[in-house]
Amino acid sequence: MELFDKLTEEHIDFIKDQKVFFVATGVAEGTINLSPKGLDSLRVIESDRILWMNLTGSGNETAAHVQENPRMTLMMNAFEGKPLILRIYGQAKVIHHLDQEWREFINLFPYSEGSRQIFDLSIELVQTSCGWAVPEYEFKKERDILDKSNKVAGEKGIRAYWESSNTKSLDGLKTNIIEKNIGK
Image (cartoon, rainbow, N blue to C red; front, side):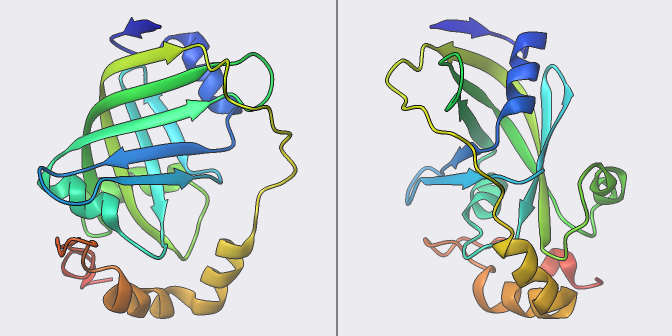
């Protein structure tokens, strides 16, 4: 195991090669959330800062958690090639559609009707470990189901879905997705 206070060039190259990453958040009491993320949704902005686009999904735990407790952990592991686990710990901020930063960052990502939030992670600690017990898998392709579903729903349908399914976490915490997106 090695510890770093920011990402090295080697870490950044490793991140660029990954097809999936995992996000963990939690508050003092209640459910801890761990979510897999994929597609072209993560950007290393600086060696101590990462942005990632959160696309519309069945839950909205990460947004609810980060607004109450900004701790976040990202994890990537090599499923192909040299084994490695990379964990990135830091403090995150939720950026909603009406926030000034949204307009600054949204064009860093491919357009999606389902773009829900951008998370801005300030890195405090980077940890690497061996990953020797992680199995090897061969990448086949990206799944396009979410993209197709978002296109069918359209922006209006997605906003309606947010209202019915994305306003509260499993523990009843507000995500502020509607309040922050009223003008959209």
